[in-house]
Length: 156
Image (cartoon, rainbow, N blue to C red; front, side, top):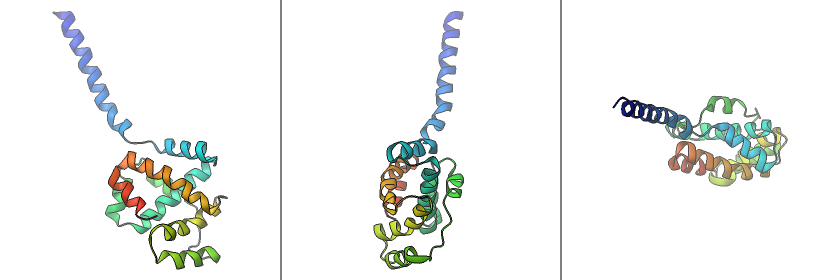
C-alpha cells in the first residue's frame, strides 16, 4: 500500500510540474522569432530585433491601445523589442514624402512605406519589410492568437 501511495504521489507531482510549465511554453519566446529571421533571411541579430521593433512600434502607433494590447498579450519582452526600433524622422526626405502620400491610403502600401525608413536605418533594403512580415505574422498568431495576427495584418 505504501509503494502505491508513493507512486501516486510521484505521478501527481509530475502532473503539477507539467501544468506549471505550460504557461511558459505556451508563450512564444521572442528569441525564436529573431532566430528565424536571422537564419531564414540572413540578417544580423541587431537588424532582426530592430526590424521587429519597428514593426511593433508601427502597430503600437496605428492600433488602438486595446488592439495593441491584444497583439502584445502573448509576446514576452515587448518593451525591449520596441526599444530596438531605430529612430527615424517620419517626414525626412523621399521616404517621408512616400509615407505621407501612401499613408493616407491605408493598408499594405502605407504601412510598408512607413517602415522603409526604419529598415534602411538598419542597413536593410526597404523590400525586406515584406520578407519580415510573414514571419512576424506567424509568430504573433502563435503567441497572441489569430485575432492579434489579423489586427497586425490589417495594418499592412
